[in-house]
Image (cartoon, rainbow, N blue to C red; front, side, top):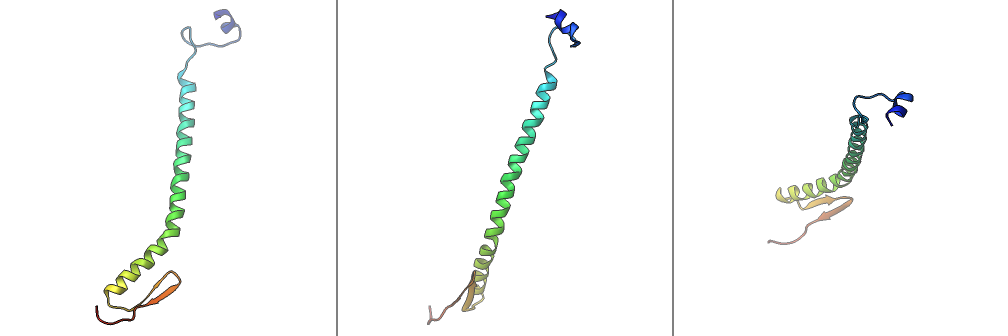
Length: 87
């Protein structure tokens, strides 16, 4: 085995090839894959937040309007009006 290794120009210290370089490359590839998948997850969460945030804001406006004594408020595209007597 040693004679074949020397004949084809494969030189390294000791009798065994260095294993750290391929493992480091594999580690970097796995790290990049993990980073890409986590970025994809957070990108999807940001899109979901952009979809839900106006609905949350409209409900918050309803609660604040009711606390201020207003009888009309809007949720999404619908307008509500409270009519009634005393509570």
